[in-house]
Length: 87
Image (cartoon, rainbow, N blue to C red; front, side, top):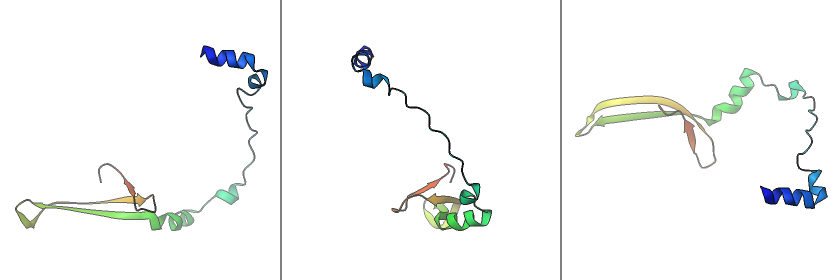
């Protein structure tokens, strides 16, 4: 911390640019970014997946113990899926 203070005092040009000025917010044309519900669904739907799980009785694969159903979203070209913990 002391070194930073010495550098700022020794090099006057650094004192002027320590904290950049805030940018003026530019107005946004809402119509250019607004999506209808149908448009949002059409864009997102290809990435949504169903996840099915089944657990069978350990010594008898013909007896279903539990099953589950959930959903997730593909987030990478490698096929990684994000889902909730409970899925």
